[in-house]
Every structure is written in structure tokens, then in C-alpha cells.
Image 1 (tube, rainbow, N blue to C red):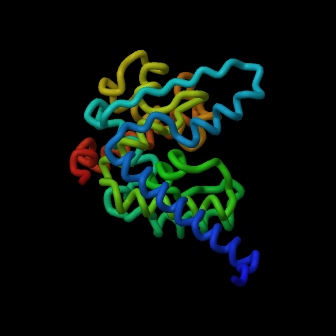
Image 2: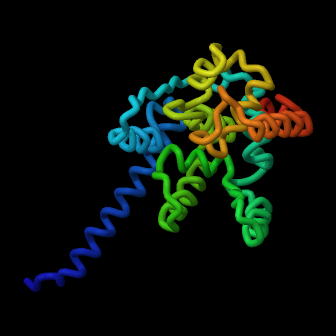
Image 3: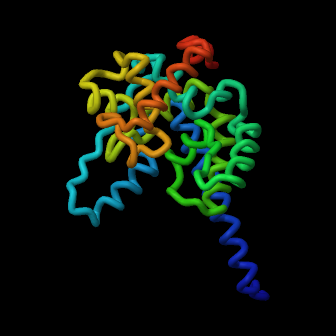
Length: 236
């Protein structure tokens, strides 16, 4: 019997590996459609990065269902990060076009990642600006949009997003910064938490700079313009 060339065997194993990865990703998306997320890829990456630090690292994370998060918090992140979240299928093409045009003429770069993209990235991927990572982000974003409801995407996002050094999810953030549960957050507190999201390791909710305070006020205005908590209540 004639032996197959090495390159054909390699292609076969690569194909099987690719199918295995696709199957694993589909299972993970299906499972996390119903099961609370215990840990995200970003949390794992931060833990690994903390191994070389002198400062002790004590991460905080507590899962709570969307019903136990103040609706104002959902509105705040939509107003701050992705105002077309209820209507798009993972990508806001108008925001992307605006960001590209802005970045061509400004040193201060503007992103256009949607809540869906950020959920996919934080949950499954590593921090990087490479095209490979971006490709995986597109793949997982489409999976989330196809397999989850908008309410579930927002719920997972609010439970895993980074609000500060070792602070993951709105419940941990509410307890850390305001001494209360996420269900009791006011609109002002929700807007302040959302204001640090562009760079949670640089901006602080417990010691807000003038920029963060200004962004908080802008977010509050946008929340009112979007119709307040009705935005979250109307999500499918």
C-alpha cells in the first residue's frame, strides 16, 4: 500500500484540528447561552500578567442575572459604547466608517467595537491588535448574535466587563466602588461606571478625573435621549 505524502497527512491533521476548534466554539457558545460564565479569557490573561507583579492581585467577580442589575446600568453601557446595539447584527458599520474617517486625521484614535464584539473578545479571546485576533473576534461575534438574544449578550457583557484592576462585572464594581449591589445602582452611578470603560485600567470610578466626570454627564444625557430604561426592557 502506497504511503500518503507527509503534506497530505499534515493537511488532514490540520483539517481535523480546525473542525475540532469549530465544534468546541459552538459548544461553548451554546453552553454559555444558559450557564453563568465563571471566568473569561480576559480574566485568565490578567491573572497570568499579574504573576510578575509586586502588587498583590485579588480579582473580584460575582455573577448576577440581568434582573438583578439596575436597568440604568444596561442603558448606560449602551449609551456609552454602542447606541445601535438593539438594531445591528454584531457590527455598527456607520460607526466603523466614522471611526476610520476620524482616525485618518487624529492622533487620538477612536474605536467602533460594539457590545457584541466586546463580549466576544472578553469572553473568548486575548488582548491584541493583530488581524488574526480580529478575525476570531468577527467569528465569535457572529456566533453570539446568531445563538444568543440581545438580552443575553448584554447580561454576559455586564458580568464580565473590566471596571478596574481585578474588578470584573457590574456586581463586583458596585460593591467595590459604591458599597451596594448592582440592583441598587442609580443612573448617576451607572453612568460613572460606564464612563471608565474605554480604559478601565487608566480611568477610575473611585477617583474620577475631570474627563471621566465630563464623560459621565455626556452619558447621562445620552441615556435620556435614548428613552431611559425602556431601551433595556425592550430588548429581545
